[in-house]
Length: 147
Image (cartoon, rainbow, N blue to C red; front, side, top):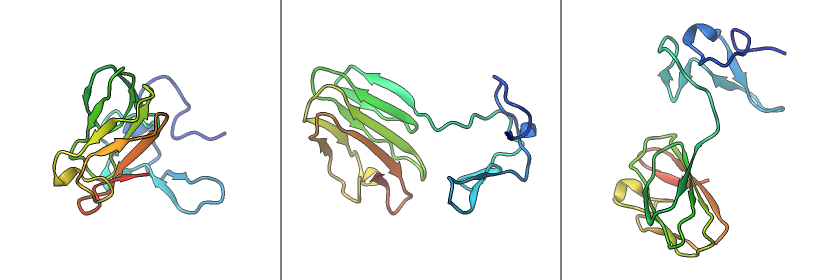
C-alpha cells in the first residue's frame, strides 16, 4: 500500500506531507489523474493545512427556507414545503438537495440571472417526493447544472 507523503494519521495534511510530484490516479482504466499541487488552477502547495474529502457537509433543514452554501448536502425535513436558494457560486462548486419530507412542492430558488439552473432563470420545483439532486456550478456561461 502506498500513501500520499507520510503514513496516515488523524492530523490534517500540510503541504510538507504531500510529494510535490504526486498525481492521484483516476479509477481503474482511466487515464491522466488529479494533480494534488493545484485545485481549480489554484496552487495549494505551501498554503498550510488542507483537508481532502469527497463527502459533503450534511445539513438537516427543518424550516421553510434555506440559503445554500457550496459543499453542503441539504436534507429537506420540514413538514411544509422548503425553498433552497442557490448562491451565485463559482466554477466547481457543488450542492446536493434531498427530499425527505415526501413533498412534491419543494423549490430550488433562482434569485438572479447569475444563478440559472441548466441555463434557465426560473425556480425549479422538485416534484419527486424521494429525489436527490446534485448541482454543480460550471462557470460564468453555464452556471448551475444538474448532474
